[in-house]
Amino acid sequence: MNKTQAVNKRELTWFLALTFALSWPMFLAPMALGGGDPAAAQAIASIAWALVMFVPGLAAIVTTRFVMGRELKSLNLGRLGPKRFYLWAWLLPPVGAVLTLLFTVLLGVGKLDLSFAAVQESIAALPTPVAVPPLVVVAVEIGASLLLAPLVNTIFAIGEEVGWRGYLLPTLLPMGKWRAILITGAIWGVWHAPAIIQGHNYPGHPILGIFLMIGFCLLLGTILSWLYLETRSPWAPALAHGAGNAVAALPMLFLAPGVDITWGGTLAAPVGWIGMALFIAWLVYTRRLPRTLAE
Image (tube, rainbow, N blue to C red):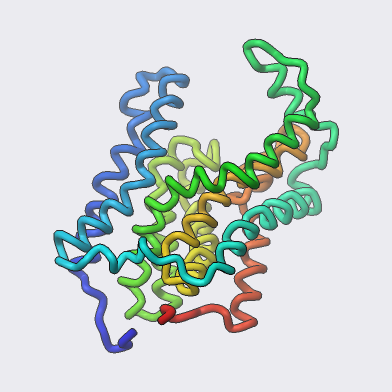
């Protein structure tokens, strides 16, 4: 990368304008179309918020091909890069979930509950309760979250990662690697704001939650950027993104009911940031970060 090269403000403006103009109405659809019915709003959110994950990638494609006139191969969708980083992408989120559980308990944010009372409450709340041992439910949840869900989630996460790490990060790299990584993460966090004000991730904290989401995205985005810079492919960060979504709430299975997820119990909560911060510190200490684009 030529360090004297300037960021192309025109393409950056097009990408951000398309991304936010298309995304935020979709994020707000549950409020606009739910009609005050929580069940309807939840159904709309499930659909609209799944589809909105493809918008950053779509904006990257439109900006690359039709605004800048470049070939789409520059987004590196046909590239995988070194395969070992896909093992990192798959395993780092579960390790982060384990650390989140550990620190949630150690810091007193939640209490360990191996009787799985929260799972029992969920089973009892079903319209037709079933006689399934809680341990079986937990085992199935863990198995699906580790093996199946990351692959399914990657299909949606690639839509985001083509945009954020595949397009925005390289576009900002002339500013410097750390600036590019942090600005990409901050923009990614702000992008979630309409979902956060509706109670997603940080219920009861619509304003504080936006800042907490930005903090979370700065940390997770740094790790996803590291995976991109090592592979020069959006697929590795997409797998890590999908795996992270799959295991984000797993610690809650092992905690007594009543944990305030704004502060602990999930990867997005500040307690969940500790493991990510430690890993980033290790990347910096071992000079694995920052990296320039692989040749």
